[in-house]
Image (cartoon, rainbow, N blue to C red; front, side):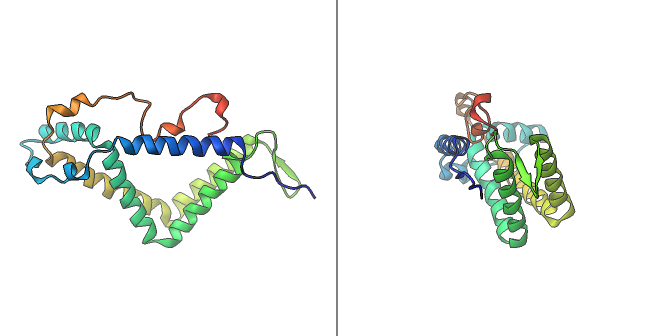
Length: 189
């Protein structure tokens, strides 16, 4: 009987190290929540162009706060539909253990058949498509994202941006999702 190597592979450690650093860096860029709900900075936009301009500026300024709001709406939707949450957790676990954290030198073997990386990726992609589009998970995620984006757009349209917002420019590769990038030598992340 061949024992499976522990999941604590270098790719696993690198992924979670980059993920935690990225989340820490991203959250350090959030704006104070009191600034987000300051009623004195809210006013009705004069036109659609004014509303779109405000949304664009406020998205740049409150991006981490807005990402947190959309994430909270998604989390609330998933926790209120536990079966969908379980299906997504199972799908995520499948991706993590069969593709992301599986050592590159060990092919996937199921019932004596060896699957290449391409076949594994294709199988996982097909399972994802079936799960997301053939169950209520897809509609739940879509509706939760639309509600979150609507909340963000409404807030962004009604908050009057200051010129100070434009002073907060930062590199494009920094932020909450920067853990997804990286060099090709860091593994399949």
